Image (cartoon, rainbow, N blue to C red; front, side, top):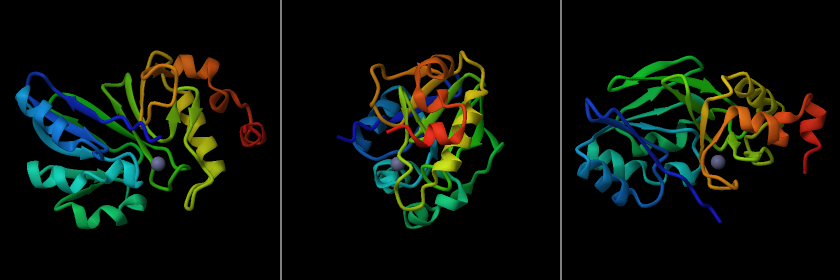
Length: 198
Ligand SMILES: [Zn+2]
């Protein structure tokens, strides 16, 4: 079961929006954006797995949006995008009036990145799920780096809302504070403890 989440992040005043990880049902999301009067200006990619980038070509064709991805994950996206904007840890940009900051969180893939919107909303891709974290036994993944990335996310404000890439938890949206208390992959106090989680 994939159970991917797709997100549109928009500024209701300027009507600019960004499409996060387009994969399935691109048509449906583009229709929602259009019906609400939004223009898709950017495609934000959390990493390069097929279930997060499968719809990039379609969104680019329909909207001309630029594609943001970390250079270490960029290769599979090159053919699908006309304009790629490389992101790094700390990269800042805007969606209308919304301020977005990139948090590079390698581990699931080398270029995995989270997007922190207006300081208190975090889009986590496959790095952090409700109750769990992303797989780190895949080609290109690195358990030690994922552990460090999760420790970095743990230090964000506890009220920060977490919007993961898949519906794997008991609730679709969570917070850093809740996960810090209940998610074993964030509770682990050192790498060996993290690595021993089945
Ligand atoms: Zn993935």
